[in-house]
Amino acid sequence: MAAMSDRMASLQDLRRWRVRPERGTDLAAEIASQVRQLGARQRQGGRACAAWEAAAPAVLRASCEVKGTGSGVLTVRAGSAGVRFQLDRWLKGGGEALLRSGGVTRVKLV
Image (cartoon, rainbow, N blue to C red):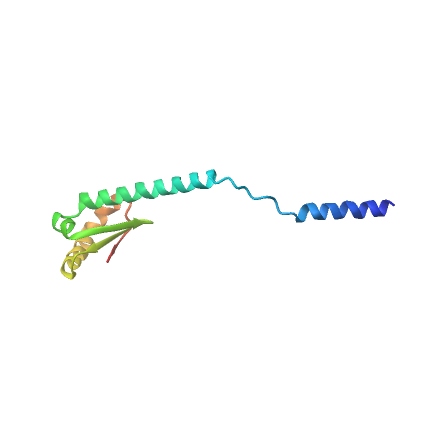
């Protein structure tokens, strides 16, 4: 009889271990996490755009458009090939170093 109760106990233990716990259906923690991440990205993007507005020459600001930021990469769209060339020369001549103050690690030209 003792062997039978040992088997039942081990069977009950096995059932308890194999049952998956119920997943939480509360989304509040996930939403709060996403809000924090979006806020951080917005702050980073705001700093990068402010650095662009402060550092870039007026001629380039007038003919280029900031398309976005992400992971320290500032994406800038040039109006023409000539403007892109001028922007590239400005960046390599020290403009990219000026943009680093805004959290920009790299500038992508499109």
